[in-house]
Length: 610
Image 1 (cartoon, rainbow, N blue to C red):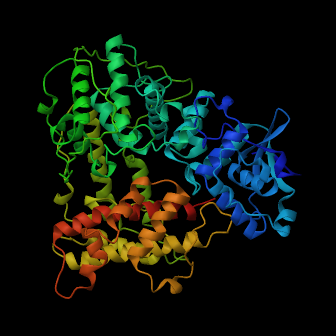
Image 2 (cartoon, rainbow, N blue to C red):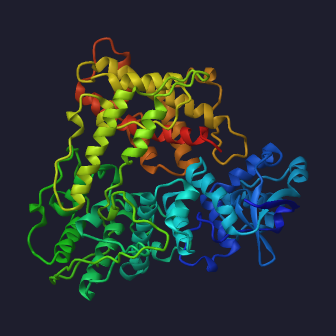
C-alpha cells in the first residue's frame, strides 16, 4: 500500500460518508452532522474522548488512514478517533440533536492532551483501493469487528465498484462462497428495508438514515435460512440479488408482504418488538413451527402462515410437510395480545400460483463458479474438507519453543473431518430436494461432537489441555468429570478474555473497563458475576456484536435463574450430595459452549497476525 505521512490538525479532517459503519441507501445524502450524531449515540465516541483525554493523546503507532478527495482529507480508518478529537478540540462541533445528559459527559481537554493532538501524523493513500487491504484486515479478520450489516455493506460496495470475487477473497481472506452468501444476505435485507415503508409508512425503520442502528443479525441468519428455503427464493449470479424473473405481480406482492411482515414481528415500529423472542427460535425446526404451525403461538404468526400458503398457490395446510428431525427444544408459548401490532396486519385471501424462478448463470469476467454449497437455501456452508485437513496437519505439529500442546490428536480431528464431509454431502442433497434426518445432539457420546468447539485461540496451554480432555470423555458415563471440565474451561476463557481486553491501552476502542487486568486481584469475584457484569457488558457495549451471546448470558447467568448451566457453575460443583444427570450436562454445554466459542473467536482474532 503506497502512502505518505503528513501532519495535520484533526479539525481539518472530514468523516467518511462511505464508511461501512454508516449503512445507508444513499451515502451522498449523509452529512457530517448526521455522522457525528450517529457516532456519539451509537459508537461510544464520548467515552473514547474521555479515554484519549485521560491518556493525554492517541496511542503511538496507530495513525489515521486518510485519502484526499475534493481538496479534503477524508478519514478512511479512524472515524471514531477523529470524531472524539473534534469533541475535545472544538466542542461547538457537537450536533444540535444530542441530549443534555450526553453533553455533560464530554470532558474538558487537559493541556497535555491539547498539545499532543492539536497536530497529528496521518497516513495519506492515493486511492480507496490502496486502503482496502488495510481496512479489510482491521475490520473483517481483526479484532475491530463491524456489525453484520456493515460487513455485508463492505462487500456490496466493493462488488458494485467492479471488484471480482477472487479479488475480494484476496483482500479479506474469506472464501468466495462466504462472500457470495454475504452479498445475497445484504440484498435480501435491502429488499425488506426498501419495501418496509409500503406496509408500515410511519415506522422509524422505514425512515432510517443510517441503517446500522438496526439489529439485523436474526433476520439475515435464522430468518434468511428459513424463508429462502420455504419460499424457494433464488438469487441471480450476476449481482446476487433476489431473482424476480418469473414472478407475476401478485406473487411479487406476496413475497414483499411476507418478508416485511416477518421482519415486523421482530423489529416492530422502532426496531424492537415483543412478538418474536429470538432466544426461543434457535433452530430451523423451531422457526418453521412458529410460522407454519402457529396455532400454539399467536395470531400474527397465523397471518404469516396464511400468506405463505397463498404464496405456494394452494390452500393445503403446509404443516403436512415433514419437518427436519432436529433436537426438540421447549419453545414456550405466547398468549399475549401484542397490542403493538397494527390492525392492518392482515392479508388478501386470494390464491396465487408460484412459478419457479430462473437464475442467470452469467458471472463477472474472471470469477469462477464457487464449488462450495450455494446458500440459496439458507444452509450455511461447512468448511470444506481440504481446508479442514490442512488444519489437521497444522494442529498436530507441536511448537517446541512455545510449549503449547496440540489441541486435539490427529485421529480425533480426522474423524471430525469425516463427519463434516458427511454433513456437507447431506446439505448438498438437501439443496437438491432430498430430505434427511440429521443426527440429534443427544445421540453423540461426546459433548464436543454434540455442540462443536472453536479452535481459534491456541496460546493458553491450560485451555488446550482442558479442550483435549473434554473432547475425549464420554459425558453420559462421567457426568461429574464432565461438569468440572466444563466449568474449568469456561473459567479459563473468562479470565483469559479479561486479562487480554483489560490490558489494552486506554484509548483502544475495546478496552475493558471497571475490572482489573491482574488475575490475582480478581480472586474474590464469582465466575457468574464476571460473566454477567463484565463479559456481557463488554460484548454488548464495546464489541457491539454477538448479540445472541450477550443475550444468552443475560438470561442464563442472571442471579434469578436456575438453569443447568448456572447449576454447574455454582450448585453442583460445590455440593457434596448432588450431581448432574446427562441431560443437564448436555443442556449446560449447549449454552456454555456458545459463550466459549464467542470468547475463543475474539481471543483468536486479538492474538492473530496484525
